[in-house]
Image (tube, rainbow over all chains, first blue to last red; front, side):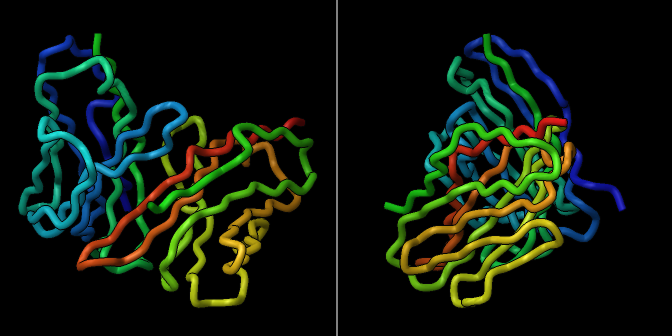
Length: 116
Length: 116
């Protein structure tokens, strides 16, 4: 069974540009969550999509958006990039929504975004 | 505010030794979940162990066990017979369900190095 796949693995963008990251969940998983990881900050929750609907959202500005397709694949978009957006972006998939507290999340290897 | 604190930024032990990673959290909720995740250099976050707050019995998974002290709001991870492959960042996370939504809050992580 293939794991969670995130593309691209590495990305370098310039301030002011926009970027789209992709996440393909494990087959059969309907929930996809996105996290931003920066050194010393742990993981910060961005949002969760379940069956093409945003179910939960963290405290990030509107420049961060996402969507989920009917095949459960998800994309995350960041517009007007800032230097502070440089981070590892992790995607996690699970069978059920995060509302099921005991659902296990499986993570991808992340996309390392560098904004210069 | 809900917080998760991992007071040890970095730890180092010899192979085969036992090591304990600490985690404390702050909440007024009575029902929640606690997790330990491992992030090796490959960057993929892997669930190590999970504890439900209403269960008094400490969770165990092979060489990994937790010491859950609900009154003290402490959730430490013990790794017995440590192996070189245990070298990774370890994150403690707290999840609760509230107001038709869930919150997942992460600690800043502990870097664990197992020396041969």
